[in-house]
Length: 459
Figure 1 (cartoon, one colour):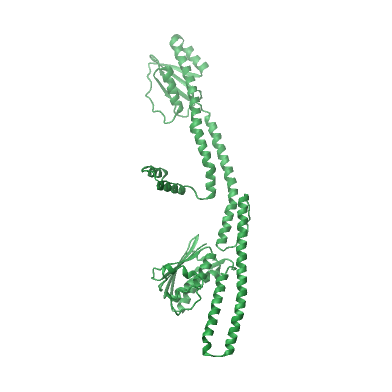
Figure 2: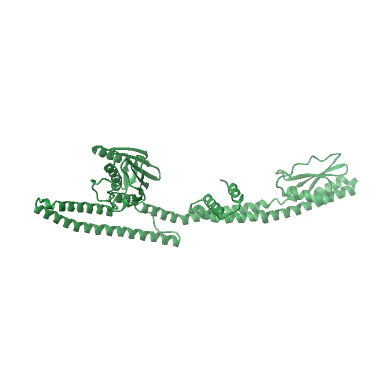
């Protein structure tokens, strides 16, 4: 939609608050979204508005006034020549010579001539309008002028009694022709100032872009760029230092959490080992079988919780081949008598934390294998995003419970197989890994009738 159509829609009916909001949203979409472009517009637009006002108010008024005075002076000279020709008809040659020497006019007389047909006036010509008005006011005789073109001369023909006075005058005698020099200086200076402003803005915005890049890397779980350091204006430096301190605090808290859980793991494993040893000493007693199952369940829950809490945060980024990973998962499905089909669009190589991403995909595929017979994986690797859809033909999950299943230790036994064992951490670990890559895992309805799990991470 063009600007004119938007204005037409706005004023074609009664203006309401909703119309104004719609127009403001439309206008906001037309402007660039980048900080550099917007800051440059803040500098350029006032300068353009100021120059437009100067050009169409002051310059137009000045241009017209000077041209009118010069045209009036030329017309007076022409009027003096006509008066001399009428007063001294026998001294025509002397009068024409005087017009050339004193007035700078090249004049000649043509007997029995007629004025040419009136030419169409140019759309915008201050000289044509001013000179015509002065000739009509001072000379009061039929005339014909030619001011069109880039010739340094203008031609004026005036009807006398039986003769045509033909005069050539220099254009700069009747027209302010040197005004364009001022315009060139004005636009040239503005262009230089815009270039200097753009260079200065680029230097000021570069630290902001570097801070945004560092924040994106942190959001994706990638290491901070080595060249990042707080620089630029004081406010930008403060923001950069605040980001670095925030990242250090978060990483320190993650390290403290991991160290604390490692200690808890060691202590709990020691106690569980004692339980197992005492149960082994007790021998094969049917009454102790439930206790054996409880110890194994505690061991499984402990390992799953530790894996969830650690989140593979210490792993470095590397390259993973998606096709090879999906082929291996399909072979695992075949060993369990299940079916997995997949399609891959885009590049096969993706830069992620290989082991963590393997676990993310493996958890979703294992869920599909456990509760469904067929799983279809659709992977699309675009320049910006990696999207993987896992569609199965299982029982699915009710929409109101799809967020609850991502909670640690939450088990939806009523919607799944009661005989399936697990700690309730599979989907929680999957979402934690996806979010550590800057993405997410969501659930929806599958076209196969079961559950659809979607991985979406930036690349």
